[in-house]
Amino acid sequence: MKQIKVDITDTLSAITRADIDAAMTEARQSLETVDTGSGAGNDFLGWNHLPSQLLADNALIERIEETAKRLAEKCKVVVCIGIGGSYLGAKAVLEALSDTFAPYRPESGHPRVIFAGQNIGEDYLYELMDYLHGKEFGIIVISKSGTTTEPAIAFRLLKDQLVKEQGAEKAAERIVAVTDAKRGALRSMSDTEGYTTFVIPDNVGGRFSVLTPVGLLPIACAGFDIRALIAGAAAMEASDQTDSLLYAATRNALYRSGKKTEILVNFCPKLHYFGEWWKQLYGESEGKDNKGIFPASVDFTTDLHSMGQWIQQGERTIFETVLSVETPEHEVVIPTDNDNLDGLNFIAGKRVDEVNKMAELGTKMAHVDGGVPNMRITIPALNETYLGQLIYFFEKAVGISGYMLGVNPFDQPGVEAYKRNMFALLAKPGYEKDTEAINARLAR
Ligand code: PA5
Image (tube, rainbow, N blue to C red; front, side):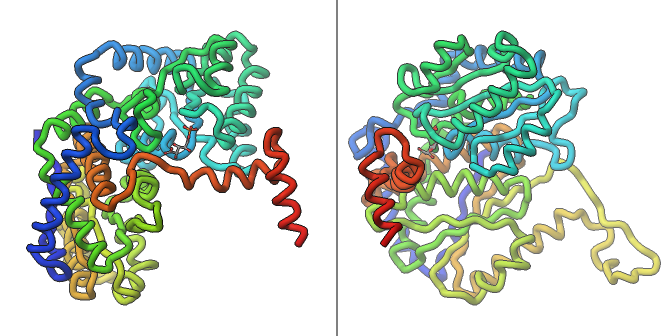
């Protein structure tokens, strides 16, 4: 199996080898802290050996595959309800592996997998319910806490629609819940209604949960090979972590030199949601105690025509990490045109990817010249195996990097602040004092 690779050569315009070597020493200590479970948040390290454990215990993979098959037999559409760590991993993998214009092929026998509960958009939900009306659909509802408002609203609406259209018994056969083993409203509702359930392990936080049923069930449902995904991650788990160490060390050395924002760049639009997944993983893990690299993401060359100016000449506090896919799945050659009215014959006969790669190289050179250090992660191809490697690589690196930064990479205390205000404003029972205080504040 080939392996993804990190290249930090083009950061050396901003930091020295000695900076990186010093950071590598710290990174190795942080790796030991992760692997020995001796740091803050060590009760959330379940992700660390998840790939090898999954491979050793075939029963869970089989149960996920059987459930996906059962849903496929009954449903043309499966709505995956969840937010944050309970949807981004599956969304990222599905987008990366699906045909952009035909993500759903009825002849494949797999249902179309779509997402809800990741926003509170009324029009989004109206249009979703309208689309589902009269269709054979099922629901995978995912919430570790079992109490998150956004997915709970979507689930209430879609469950209501499913029961009205199919009857309670058929609805219950088409709903699968992924939640905590014991706690939360979703657990008690599942037990009462008799839904099939999967458990999110206590020691795996939401943003690290893509290799649990949270990600694996929707991915299997859409017809992708979860065994290859897990095998890719397991290969990375078994590696010596050189690449995770190098990435964590270099980004921390850059941060200390004043580069406060990291932009994750792709030159392949299928990786857009991988950037979204990465932003949650790095943003929630590191942005605390008034510290942390700000994680941003762009799709190139698209965003070179919108964000390119800022990146080239704006404040010099950024660095880039490029996800570079070596080989596309398909081949498209630019044709010769006798009239050459568009002046493009100079690239006739070349594959589109050759042009893309020159755009990538040209962009890197321009940005490095403009004061934007550049790291590059080479991915041999976009398939389950390499996505599995990439997922584990980034998870491991964020654990190392968070400890280097001096934070607990596995908690997210700041996520609660908006919820408290929202519940107070909506007069949720139990929030009476907050409601009084927030209303007084608004009346001032
Ligand atoms: O990483 C996190 O903890 C969050 O983003 C959660 O994944 C998100 O809030 C969803 O939580 P839950 O799965 O409990 O509904």
